[in-house]
Amino acid sequence: MKMGMKDMMRTIKRYKEAYRNYMGVMWNVWRGRDRIKVILQNGNSTYLNHDLAYAYSVLFTTRNDHIYNVNLEGNSIKFTYNGHNIMFEYPIGDAAGVFGFEIYAFLRVENETVIDIGANIGDSSIYFALNNAKKVIALEPYPYSYNIALKNIKNYDLQDKIILLNAGYGQDGTIKVDPDFKNPGTINLRSFTDGMDIKILSLKTLLSDYQIDKAVLKMDCEGCEYNLLKEDNDTLKKFERIEIEYHYGYEKLKDKLEEAGFTVTYTKPVKLFNKDATEHNMRMGYIYAKSGV
Image 1 (cartoon, rainbow, N blue to C red):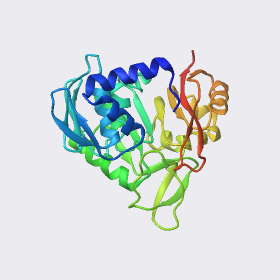
Image 2 (image 1 turned 90 degrees about the vertical axis):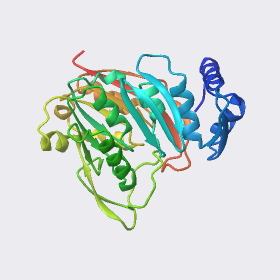
Image 3 (image 1 turned 60 degrees about the vertical axis):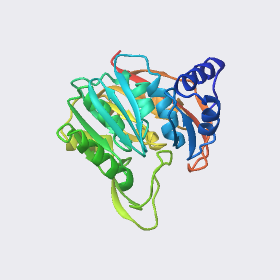
């Protein structure tokens, strides 16, 4: 992604606080290296992949009352969040964004039912549950990621709050997915020649199946968000707040949400080339929608 000068300076400062060899770490994270030598500020050195090196730089330098006791342990990152001891083993999802930057704070999930589309390894669902969501209905279509999410949710004894479905979002139906495919979290859902039959569920079906009249919605599903354009407005009006990571522009999503009565804001699109996606050239950002404002 393109980065402005202020963002670049903040990033350099963050890596400098986390690592003694910060320039080399930054360079190798940017290159996506899977074995990066890092020297921590306490003098200890180890080797991390780019995801862990990035996440540690964010969580270690987070300046709020939510996160502390940030440590590395092998291929795991450990920290305390709101008094809860958290550990994510590799793959770690977006621990930096979800817990460090708190990218979903907009949703204000306390006492709310949350539909989490694109749960990946369960990091966002766990974040919602630890922020006192009443219930989380989470969708993850890839069996590999789903099984990791299931393990993570059990680790924190959150099965009573999080209903994890091995399903994707879109028009109701099924799709074949290779159960051994290791989804890196940056690939849009597509059908495999062989594999397991995975359900695809619409918002209308989810709301009906779980008898939900009021909820908030998080979507980060590498392009499946545009299926929202096929939902009827009465379905969308059951959501009080919606946050979407868009991948191919915001315009049609914005128009649809405004048509359904939402007040919509969005971040400026950032151009990104993703060789793993069906459409390589992305225009990414976030949409924030509030109902009845």
